[in-house]
Length: 279
Image (cartoon, rainbow, N blue to C red):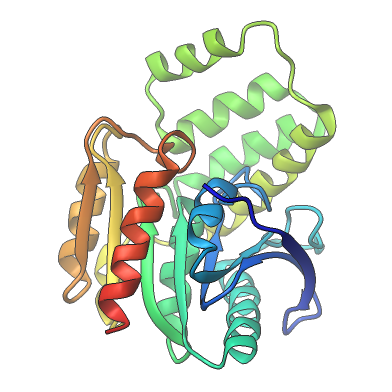
């Protein structure tokens, strides 16, 4: 695998929010949207595998440094404006429509964007959007997370996030055992914690109705790990059945972390899908 030079650009959203976007490669444009706790680095190993024939754009979403962290409560409407600005920049640079892909929370944002304004999109690919983790039930969890955030209680923040994501206790224990005595970088941990706080705000203001995505008309790929815990598999089946003509892929032996554990699988699936819809 080659390693390609990257460039960081600033893009201004409609409300003046500054977004930092990492760009790598050349060819048809692809915008990759990271999930909660992520950032400019999240899609790096996938992007490097796409960069030989695509120009890949990777924004740090609002709330995640080095992009701006605006005051106030965040909504998906805010982030749709952000992502639309990135897509517009990618289209203007290339002269052609954009492939949009998102992972986890970033996939939910990609769905919102494709439903709101698909004009500049050639395709949509989503990996395990947590569509079940939204609405009024998130409100109390947001309150608990915010309180833990304000007193910088990492353990309480992590416990609340596990409730939101519904990660099974045995997987949580496995991560803890793998980490051992290693401590996270405090600056990076705080950056991720701020981003999670604002993502929870948007999730609390969202809904869980999968049927609303039936309006999406661009070619769509729904991706998932065959070993991801419930209710994700059931949710992905419902989503794939809802979006007209959606393709579905589920990787055996993989879970919600496949973009990190098996980036070649993800890159190959995306490349094949992009080629199919570009014919």
